[in-house]
Image 1: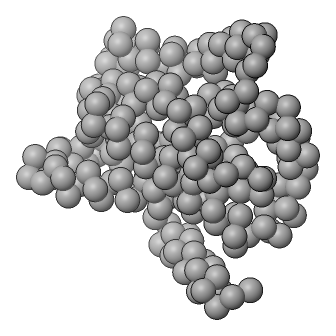
Image 2 (image 1 turned 120 degrees about the vertical axis):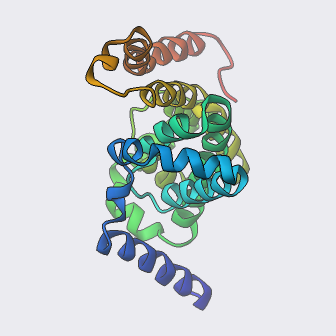
Amino acid sequence: MSSSKIVLLILIALIIGAWVFFDLGQYISFANLKQNQEVLQKMLQDNFLLVSIGFFVFYILVTALSLPGAAIMTLAAGAVFGFISGFLIVSFASSIGATLAFLVARFLLQDTIKNKFGDKMHTINQGIAREGAFYLFTLRLIPVIPFFVINLVFGLTRMKTWTFYWVSQLGMLAGTVVYINAGTQLASIESPKDILSAKIIASFVLLGLFPLIAKKIIDRIRRKPHAKI
């Protein structure tokens, strides 16, 4: 292994170690978001660009290193930035972070990923051989396999990096919309009775129904010829 790869591995290990040692994951929670919502809103008003870039970079870091909290951060983006800004930030940050994780797996952690997720490699290689990049699209649309596992395992396939990026971004658009929308609604909860509001209930129902709706769409597309991307 080259010295540059060793340095990168050490850097990644240090970041993950610091994350665990200082329990940084405790700050990625909706309860913490609600507690500091006014402070965050004030920071946004004072310097929207700086806060947006900071959140964007942090989201990429969490995703690239397969750290827990991406789903909560997506809800938080909707709550803090609103629907449009939150959607744009998460859509690009999640795709960039996923691609970086894909590259880390491909160039730095091949043996580790094979040992840990080797049982999934055969299935995924078969899916790619059968459906091409459309197989990745279906996995992004229907969360059968965890988000971070897809990033890592696909790094060991022959899929091109650019294909992985744009298919991931396209496939995650619908899910991002659903989560950002839920985040905008959850931000309005001030008391227990607010949980029973029509908008909040509708957002939770949409979160639950989304995988089922996505599966119906994918099944219909698969019935048509030439379903590859």
